[in-house]
Length: 622
Image (cartoon, rainbow, N blue to C red; front, side, top):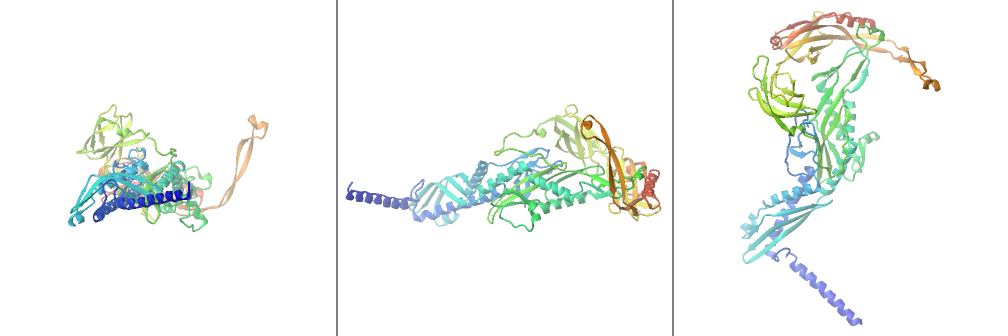
């Protein structure tokens, strides 16, 4: 090809490019419809701004709602598990990604990316219907907009919105139409969502929130321990729960993930950094005002106090030479934790329920996203047996109560009785239990097999709040005292005087135990004891069962006993409702000699068994 021919080719290519540019700018507004005249462009620009605004709001709501915008399928909690399907965060419901349902089943509600995009598209569709063209109507424009159809694609740093809607705009003799409208907004929604899935998967596999929760439990509540003293160790149950919630509140807000969005104040703060790298700011939130389940098990635990009795003070145990209080309490703790991923403009958050089971983290859940469809069997969804429950007081007057039915490890709410009768439907079960709770009455649990029985008559005992006073040796109490009321069915309540004087009692047979403690100056000197035991011999002889005696010296340090038993007694009696309703009981016991040695203290405990308790009920204020 000669040079002139080459120049001609370049000229033609240049003309084609120039023509393409001219055509592009001339018809750039003709997308899916006619070319838009400049006089009508402002209306289309306004509609485009409606799309952008609705998209921004949808992204904001999806982030705040853990990938959800719609508040649907709300399921309330129960006394067994106080967590509904949504966490109320600053007045807005956020759907849990993981929680314990009202009947005790584990539920997962993690939205897929497609579900999040679909809810955003639905939100934008509804919002576009409210796009107000009133301003343009007043300017003489005619605007017709069809029902929109929206598609949303969420990416790491942007959200794309495609709207199919016929928009026709006219003014005077000018008319333009567009059928499709595209918009794009800057957003980290996709990136935040993906990071949230990573953190959630980490929590399911490693249970790092549960591990932090267990550490808080051992640091803020009595779990295991031993104290050298001869008086019982006492904790107020409600204060233990309040302290535990405060500890969770203070510690969980300091949890971080490995990253560059914070500065540690010292090496000890590294404990709060979980070893998962992140490139965005992440925090964990717990509030003591959120629904929290705390159940405490152990000897001496009731709704008001937790008591551990001293060992070494009982009759015949004076040879030990000292007293000590061992305690062991078991906790079931469940509470919400809200994980937030954020920057200065955006937020993505999702709640989970943290479960500590018998002082240990729950069993880990190992599954990959997306989640499978398989769920645990929900007994409460299969209520097939009609039951009638009649509820009375001891005088056979009808009483209204909340009724639940427990079968295996699940509890289903049946409802509240009307006029003392509840007609409901329960799941089929052998040897399940009806649970009844009514204001002013003792909770009742009654065996009931719904596959065989259809009717139940249950009597509730009225419960009275009674204030306890105590006189020791004819004088007012000048130390501390533990007063326990133990029913013949094993239920007990305890007063810790002088701080906690009120107890709730119902009619029945009781054993009343009163222990009075005063300041003591008993000092147990340091001592060494030799303990011997048979152990297997070393070598071949040990293999064939031969043993030898091995002895160890055990040193007991010097110990001061600051509280000692100085009075008390025991009484078995029947408490009538006519006495309990007076609201005040005065107890009286003998005072013992102040012990000066561990032997004296042991004698006081032996004396305690032979002493009786005086009981007198009276009207309050009398």
